[in-house]
Length: 431
Image 1 (cartoon, rainbow, N blue to C red):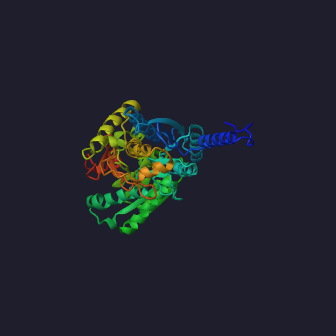
Image 2 (image 1 turned 60 degrees about the vertical axis):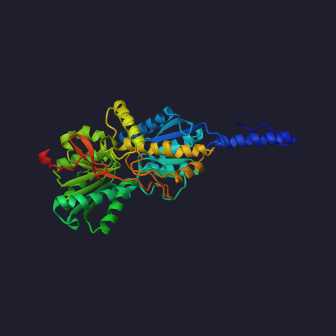
């Protein structure tokens, strides 16, 4: 719309007409939301890495989030408002992600961005959303550096890297130490991590918790996710003779690490990974025997967790959508599918209905609605609850310990969500 040709001289009527046109122009350029009154539509953009190195898990998160949004529409929308969905591919690249978000805001006037799988991508997206007063609803990225500036338009449903480290250390203190027959302080711990925002933040959290609990980290190996061979990392870890290894990779480096561990006959009592360690592609590449006993720390793989403590509504939604996901995608709804389902569930079942009821759907009204969120444990499809702090983080989000057993990634810790007991991890000669 253009103001060209409208004179600012003349009658009051003309001047009022100009003001009205100007207001329309400003409204059409804003990503901030709808005007006051009845809200009939919610415009949501999904930004995930659906191509590139992170696409294996990015697609799982996006597909699950989209299923949850469609489920909401099939059940009357949110507070009577229907959801219109727009998608964009971050291409596994932070800069492309930021461009995609700006395009969704400019061209589609989205009011909420759901993303974004990776911490590095989320770091690039968050300032764009904040600058345009659009909510970034983060369902996957865990680094505390994502919203380091403290932007008010950021809300995260999963835990931070501290929850990963907390689950690792809790499992070591209260399970592994007993099985290894050693005081926890005598267990030799190796750490490996990709050197980006995700891996570095997990490593930092592990170091802090290790110091607090008198634990002994004997090696801490950082590497570039773009590495083509992780044999040097494995050899340095092997030389340090750890009993347990905690590794925080992304998708691409996971098979490289595991192949190098196999080739170098690197055996420890427990390896606890994340990211690619929970992917269905990890099972496909190495087979059930090849990954038997390997642990993973993340939000729960919702296909294989105890759901008896879930609320009736959360269980119904989970049972329906994880079955739908498996049928459509050809593999179970594991960790990253669970992130997409669970995080989006909180948005459409709890937050958006309150924001819509306010009569004005803006970043301010959505944030105000989120400040009232108080979902108890068991109230979401991921098994934990939701309550947001001043930084926008979900203080009730947790990470769990899972283990590959017979080709299934089963939750084994804590007991409230576990469906199996941990088993000893076989050596390479036993696989």
